[in-house]
Image (cartoon, rainbow, N blue to C red; front, side, top):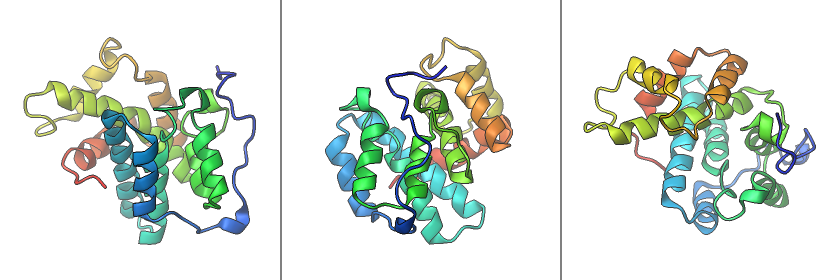
Length: 203
């Protein structure tokens, strides 16, 4: 069920004339640091951005396209810290004002379909939705393990996934829904997150 307070009430974002217009990584980090005060949230956003970039590169996309994926992940929760009642709406409006590529903006709008009412269409849309909740759960699991990410296995993550008292704020429903929409098995998503998130130099 969608949340009326966060529903964006539209399916199209940005202006097609702005295709390929992007923020530099420096500009994106300036925005992130101005808007996000919570250090744990910053880590989450950087982790999701890294996963998005790495997935795009793995799929053979050009560096310029992978940069768009990176930006979508890096900025997807930019307004959550200070403006939770405007979550998604405020960052979308900011990026529209800056004339950013609509593909990036729409992907951000899609990272919670039952909250924002926007259906994922593109691979970027679907993978941002897929990585968001799962990234948080895997990171929470790493924090409870003395060895962190080292030696982490898919079966261990799946055990925590089934335990709804663990990282209870993580939506198992969204993880399953996102995997189905992306047509990527949950096991494969977990393996990718563990491999790419654990030892990354986040940017």
